[in-house]
Length: 190
Ligand SMILES: Cc1cc2nc3c(=O)[nH]c(=O)nc-3n(C[C@H](O)[C@H](O)[C@H](O)COP(=O)(O)O)c2cc1C
Image 1 (cartoon, rainbow, N blue to C red):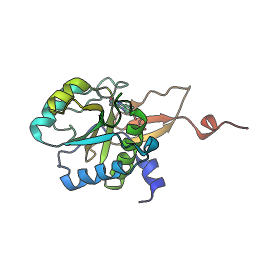
Image 2: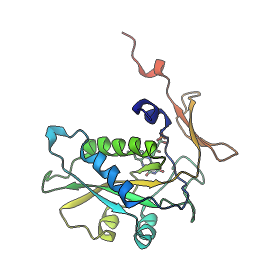
Image 3: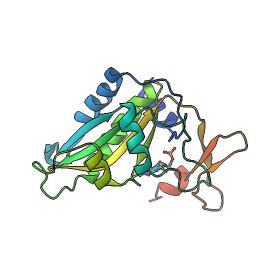
Image 4: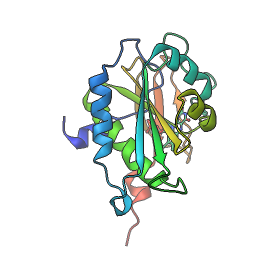
């Protein structure tokens, strides 16, 4: 798969089969994030793989899913089989501000995940302090984001935006529809 196809095929997936994702694959995703672009090449991010059953169960209640849907959160049997926690090392970036770097790192992992046949959901609506405690992370590591990962058990597609409404919605067959602004709208004519 080329990068362009990965970019256009990637959609947020919130329901997963329960087939485990191998540790080698999860480690490969972290390796991709490791070589992303970093401001001043500081590389303040660290990553934690969460794929142990007890930890997965402890983490799920600390996450929120699909704010735009009435019933979009994964039920038991549909939940991610792994998460990668994106952490800021305050020993490298003392104020913990690495949002932009986290964005580049998460995107890099999401695109490689598509190539590997995986679905992902970038999670920002999370209880950071509780996740830090659950993972027993040292004080120097702050939780920025989780990337939920698993083999997809849901279809999602892009649709044209109507009446400026950006709210994603579910079709009767369970497919998620994600309105994207058109190239004409986002490319400023000059
Ligand atoms: C910074 C950020 C935080 C997000 N947080 C959540 C979240 O907490 N829960 C969730 O279900 N989706 C979350 N998402 C996924 C978005 O809802 C999703 O990217 C958006 O609806 C567009 O869909 P697409 O990724 O398929 O293009 C987040 C995305 C980003 C970029």
